[in-house]
Image 1 (cartoon, chains in turn orange, red):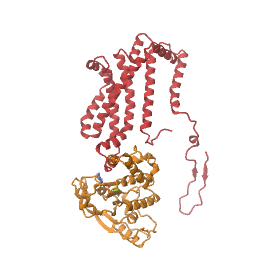
Image 2 (cartoon, chains in turn green, red; image 1 turned 30 degrees about the vertical axis):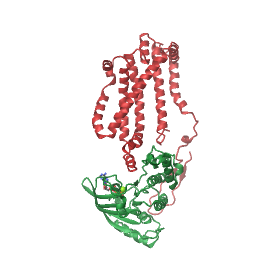
Image 3 (cartoon, protein in one colour; image 1 turned 90 degrees about the vertical axis):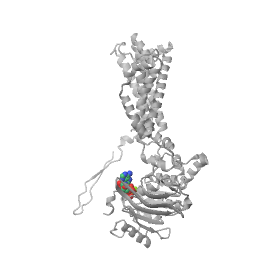
Image 4 (cartoon, helix red, strand yellow; image 1 turned 180 degrees about the vertical axis):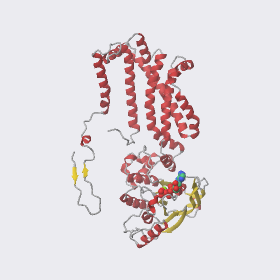
Length: 274
Length: 289
Ligand SMILES: Nc1ncnc2c1ncn2[C@@H]1O[C@H](COP(=O)(O)OP(=O)(O)OP(=O)(O)O)[C@@H](O)[C@H]1O
Ligand SMILES: [Mg+2]
């Protein structure tokens, strides 16, 4: 395990935890965004992070991913990390397969083996036949699946997902959710999933956390047996609790199948509380 | 074009009336018509060909004397005459070589400078003002100086061409490097690309479209400079042939020299187009209707 700022401690030294963040603070231009974040994620745990728009979810995720070094506090994360962003962020001038194995060194295993590994990862997201295509020819959902393959091929000990399905349509999103669930069950990385979608958080996560005012204000285990259904009484109860924590009151009892999203796609956060 | 008019349904009380709605097909029919497939190269030759024919017609009609303007046929004959004498090809090759050497040097220097100031803030602060200032100096004003510095051989010509092409390459490549999406760079970083890997696989390919624009401009610029350099001070090259022709009042040879430049310019442009097609095939940009 490595402190992002450079101090290295062995991965095993931390009783099975994959993320230990203590008293993390981050401010932009004197404005505190993260005030005091404490978060521990066990090594094969799936944690969802909810929060209203602009509360600092991405900021926290970027710190954990090693993309932002200007924080206070202590952060320990594994060395093998992978990030999936809201946009797929594929390199347009590299073919799909090259994007998947981007940054992996062929020196260790040889070019052919690396290629096989990339193809395997593409097969897992059912995009093997697009291996030789340019990224710009993919649909939004396909591109996001490639991004998922690109993260998985590294066999990460920690997967950081920043609203990975935020830009997808509801149908594709449901497919992607079960794909993610299946792949995580298979590879068992620690996962931090940032999302606006309360239902998505409850469906997928072992634990749901809520970020309010720069702190984790709620941290609950989801003890609903899988596969989870939105109609489950416990599901509805937890959803209400999370929505209340987020400051959203549902006006009418929503039918079980409704996807409750905290922010519209356009990410105009002000509409959240209506 | 089929136009359907739907009548508004009966109105409910207190609801704004619906205005009638006109439906048409999304693309006007004329644009969907099946095109006759003419190869691209053929289509690109048609324009210049028309110009040639008009030029010939004007000359044949006797609008100008043959001293003022030579007709395309006369220009072609002049070219053949020089070719038979064994004058055309060596001079052409010499001009071509000057351009290639100068351009090669200019591209090398331009790209190096652009990479240094594109990748490093310190490089930009140090180099960019210098290059911008140097760019403002008219290159042709440097001809006398170049002769003082490099004498009368090949060097001053190559120097001038290199200088002329460097700036177009520098400015465009620099802009290209700076326009690479920061998000892609960040993605490359998180996926473990080294600094050099980032430069090689993300930043430089991202700057390639702009570099090619620079290369086109540099190509045009090089031919411009080589002709001037050869007319002022040379014993060989197409520019030299043109100067010679002027002293003997051979308008046809002068125009033949210019025609050769035009043809070479067209070929160079085709070459860059080919490069673009090969190197930028990942793009799905607008390619024109
Ligand atoms: N680089 C930056 N410079 C200045 N302010 C920033 C920067 N990055 C984030 N912020 C600010 O920090 C706050 C939190 O941003 P962040 O992107 O983490 O929000 P978020 O919770 O991910 O929101 P969303 O759900 O809309 O993605 C915002 O107010 C934002 O303006
Ligand atoms: Mg965010």
